[in-house]
Image: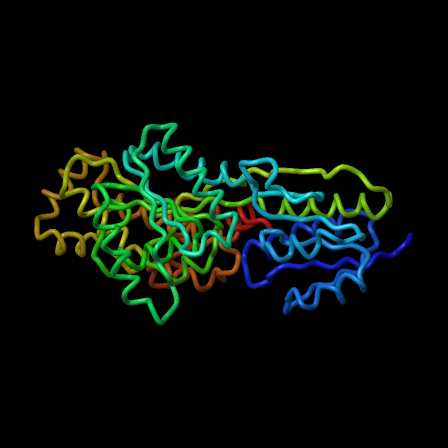
Length: 389
């Protein structure tokens, strides 16, 4: 079988790009294609001519405008990946596999609606004009707000550069405080959502009780850097890579010109975590207690800590909890503890031996005993069943 040299032009520092590359690898592993795969680790458009000359085919991230222009004149087979577009003529004229930007925002929007949130804002990028996928997500947000009769509220004047960070953070906090009570915010990416979580922590705004936040990307790093774990829409990045590799393989084998083919891939789902775990409580004391539990669940939290925080007797607090939630304080703590354990176990990059400390357990034996009793299976077996290699 003929061997082909295939170039992958991506920014491997980005989570989405790495996951697309993983999908390409999945196709390579199960197919009969004979590829010599080249990944440009420090890609720049100045090197494009050399890369194109030394490869038989290319898969590239076409969210980069310069990449689109550079590849447009290529006589060699190539496949683009990137975001979807509302307007047909905005798509590049090549085989193209897209993440469905409208569906990403729709999933986040409808998740917040189901939580009973009546005001949903959008946090975008200051330089969105240079990132077409961000513009498409803004458009989707406006369309959904109009469709569901929600007043639109968009903010994009936050520059994360260190030189402007203090002023930008003050402005972001002011914007968050200007929102209606119990608002939800959709962030254009998980990275932007992290800035929201930071701003809320600095300003003393309770997440999710005062502001619920949803991101996009399922970026593990965000959950390492915040006390509040982030609800996020998971893109179908691996399927995108798989489809792109299959399209390129077809081009290389057939050697024929054809009309551009397009595949739009829906989100893989939504991972609900603490940032939208809005408790529909009518008792303000129970609401305060649940917020305290959520903020401290990574610690060795006990009922006495909740009692000291509220300054009331255990009997009184348990009575209020029983009336509002149908359980006592201790059971509510165990429920939140289990949610955190499952979230940590679903991240394959965290060794199981590290999870007890991250979930507030005094020892790994105590953690194993707790989890096994609650779930009827061991932590190791839970990870095996719920985490894809």
